[in-house]
Amino acid sequence: MIQQHIIITGAIFGMLSVIFGAFGAHALKKILSTDQLHSFETGVKYQMYHAILLVALGFNAESISSAIYWCFTIGIVLFSFSIYGLVISDAKGKKLRFLGPITPIGGLLLVIGWLLLLIHAF
Image (cartoon, rainbow, N blue to C red; front, top):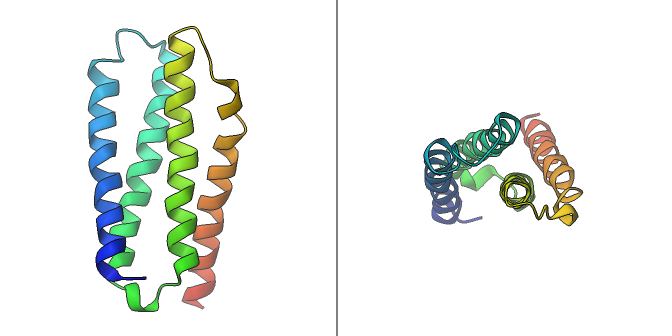
């Protein structure tokens, strides 16, 4: 993996998490229930945690396998973005149920990314 590519990916995810967090806190706060807002915030938090991790990994890119990068990148998209879609579609009364099974797949990829990082450390 190219160092610059990993850092850019992390920076984009970090920037989007700030934008989505502000959007949730201000624009969506009026239309989401407390539970929906909490779910949306969970997606934002996990996205930011993993964005920061990608940036940190980017500075050590020479030693990081592409599998770690892709698990975290695809995991963020599937986990956080499916939560955003579920919450917003539910608030509009047309819940996109097909996104439900995608969220745990994204979570599993995040877990696998952490496991690969742990294995890499040993």
